[in-house]
Image 1 (tube, helix red, strand yellow):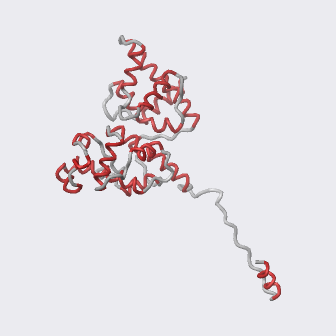
Image 2: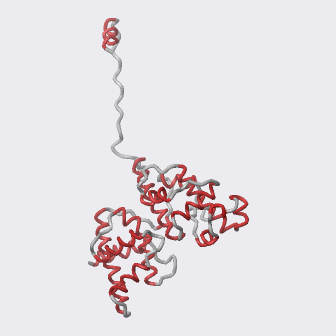
Image 3: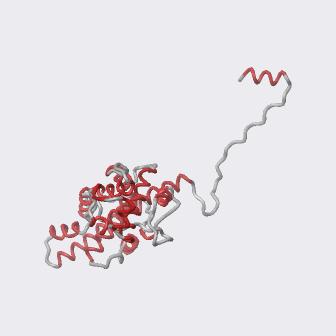
Length: 282
C-alpha cells in the first residue's frame, strides 16, 4: 500500500477522493421503523400467535407436531423442543422448515374442517400413519388471515408474521413496558384474589378456592406455568414483561371460565383494560 502511494506522488497524480462516510439518518420517514425492531416485534407476535393457537386448539406439542409431519408428508419437521422455543420467543431467527410446518399444520386443520376428512386425506394421505386421532382435528382451531378470513394462514403468512410484516388483530395482543408489566402483575394478583374471595363466599375453603382458580387455567399450558400463576396469586412472584405478554391470553381465558362468560366475549384486550382500570382506581 505504501509503494502505491509513493508511485502516485512520483507521477504527480491527483490524490484519490475520500470515500463517502456511511451515515444513518437521524429519523425515519413516517410509517417506517428499523428492520431490527420490526423483526423483534414479529418474533414476539409469532410467540403470542402460537400461545393463542395452542391454548385454543387444545393440542399438545406432540400432537401439533404430528399434524405438521402429516401435512409435510414426512416426520421430524416440528419437534416438541422446537415448538417450545418458538412459543417462548427464544428463537432469534425461526427456521423456514419450522414455519413451513406450522403453515402446513394450520392448512391441514382448515381442510379437514372445511372440506371434510375424505378431501383432506386425498391430499395428505391416511393420518393413521402419524397416529393422529380424528378428535384432534375436529376440536382444534385454525388461524385465519386477518383480511381474507375464510383462508388459513399458510407458510408465506407465517414468514410474514415472524418478519413483522403481518399481525393478527384478533389476538388482542398488547405490548407492555416493564413498569406497566409490574403494575399489571400486581393488579392480576388482586383480581384473582377477589375471584377466590367470591368462591369462598359460596362456601369453599381458601385452599379449595385457590384450586378452583388454578383449575380454570387452560390445561394445554405446562404445569410450571400453572405453578408460577399460583406463586403470583400468593404474592411470592411477579410476571415479567415477556411472561405477561405471553400469558395474557391464557390468563384472560382463566378469568372468562371463572366468570362463566360466553366464549369470545373476554380476551387479552378486555383483561388488559380491566387491570389498567383497577390500577388507576388504586
